[in-house]
Amino acid sequence: VRMKSVTLIGLGPMGQAMAGAYLNSGYEVTVWNRTPARADELVARGARRAESVEAALTANELVVLSLTDYDAMDAILAQAPYTALAGRTLANLTSDTPGRARQAAAWLAERGAVQITGGVQVPPPGIGTPDAMTYYSGPRDAIEAHRSALEVLTGIDYLGEDQGLAALYYQIGIDMFWTALAGYLHGQAVAEANGISAEDFLPHAVKTMDLRYFLEFYAPRITAGDHEGDVDRVSMGVASLEHVLHTAQASGVDDSLPAAVLKIFRRGVTAGHGHDSLTSLIDVLKRR
Ligand code: NDP
Image 1 (cartoon, rainbow, N blue to C red):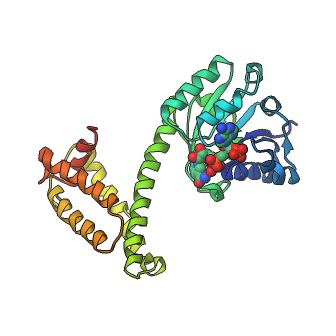
Image 2: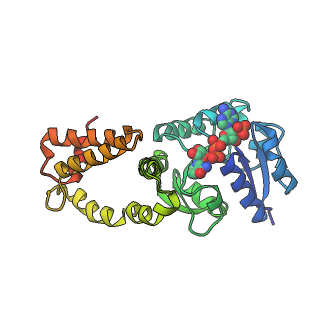
Image 3: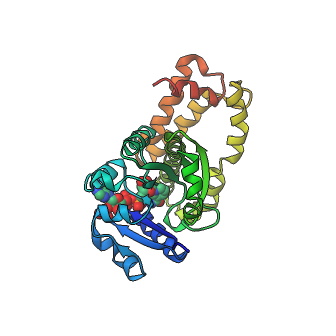
């Protein structure tokens, strides 16, 4: 019986959690990290330390990469001879643009390696928990061949052969996440400027930030191209955002975030959408 084994390159918080999940599942784990000390704890738990990038690549057919970006991958792979890549499957769980993912997959293919592109949807503590998911794209057969190893980390949300898809879905999700979270932080800054603690505002914040109703209401209308202003209007949004802006200013809080949103709504009015639904702003946003 062949021992289950995997190589992990990149031991940031995410890579650490991934290597730990493999050790917990009885895998033989080979690790490499630019800063070697970050592997110490994992080595104490039974991981093998590769002394070079080449040794890390050649130790296993499946190599999981968890790095800051694809520039980091380029810098790491440049340290090994290309022969070390031949026959490897690189599960690249590093986030970057769809373009970089496609480019790297083509570069690896020229050297006899297969890339699987992944976009992890949970923070490090979520790795190895039942509800965790990762967007994957790339060759279906390579993903199937390594299904059990990938599923040690998270569930598989397979999007298709195009290597850029996993990166694209990840970036769209994180686009929504950052702006929504920035909205929370800005609102809380206004709250604190008025003596309301995060703890006190929490139940209200949870209610307000739960956008499920709006998403499920708007998505079919957006799909149908129906921007009728029967329940909401861009001009109403402008008036509302002006109150938000003035409240932030009166509280002595930075107003750049609501000002940026107000600017988008005003562009909508200028484009003739004042009496249309907020969803008409998508057409405005699609034109840079
Ligand atoms: P980090 O940015 O902390 O990952 C750092 C890793 O990249 C370290 O191993 C670091 O090495 C290495 N690295 C960076 N630059 C270089 C370089 N030039 N040469 C060699 N190695 C380099 O990220 P995380 O661990 O938090 O996450 C990893 C990936 O997972 C990222 O793409 C992130 O976007 C994604 N992700 C992260 C989530 C999170 O909550 N953390 C959630 C979902 C996805 P060294 O230790 O030597 O600095």
